[in-house]
Amino acid sequence: MTIWSPANALIKEPYRVLLKRGEFIDRERAGRAVPYKIYYPVDHDLDNMPVILWSHGFGGNRDGASFISRFLAAQGYIIVHITHIGTDSSLWEGKGGHAWDILQKVRISRETTLDRMADVPFVLDQLEIMAGEDAEIGTYIDLSRIAMSGHSFGAMTTQAMAGMMFPNINEELVSLRDSRITCGILYSPTPVAHLTGAEPSEVYSSIDIPLLHMTGTEDASPLEGYDYKYRLVIHDYADHEEQYLQVLDGGDHMVYNGTRGKLAHNPRREEHEQDIMNAAYAFFRAYLHDDEAAKMWLDAGFR
Image 1: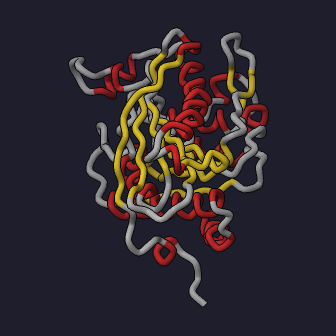
Image 2 (image 1 turned 90 degrees about the vertical axis):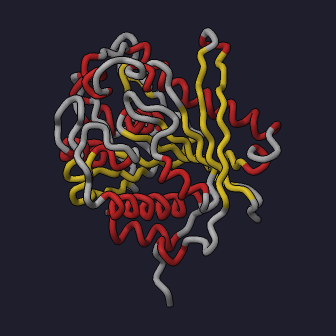
């Protein structure tokens, strides 16, 4: 009997992937624009496909992490990338100096962060509309199978949607959980308890869905300076039993985004990207397709 692995489970001829760009306008939030970029397969034989949201890091946008999303879309997923205005690349684009130097001086208000969080349920609402109107994408969207993922600040956003408590405008810890999201991947999990004054258990124990936590031994925070071990606190305190952890030996913060920022060349980048794609594919097979063999593979390597 062949033991399940991503290598032998991938479809032999990946689907061709197309992109759709646009923006959703939220009339309830003073016409706030939420740009999106959707990766979707064509020329397939599928009846429907799960949806995976992707949320960018601080100073990023909908164009990040393309290597992950192209790969997953080619395997039969619809991947929706969101740009969160106010925490995106507009903070540094067109300004002198390196993006990271500029971002280190930027202070983001709580209102702006909460707007970022509110983008997620709004986009899910818009996808419900798209499902009824878009022949090429909407026809195949399976909104009963929705996952979320994100890098750095996007991981924090995913954590909030997964049930992590988050301080509101009055510094009260509240739940922003969106129950439509059933599982998720955190590319560089981002701790917040130290910013709230609360105990980690108060902040993270309310996470109530399966999550795959991805980090690397060189995954230091570009802005705050803490090392990768600090990122493990979310995994350690999440109450939901199905929490997986991948720690890449030598993996750094930007390997998940497909860009380098100020980081030096990573000689293991190709290897790390393959490890990331394999684990992501296995996780989504396990939790968006109820694939027990994929889950056993995850249990053996990431628990």
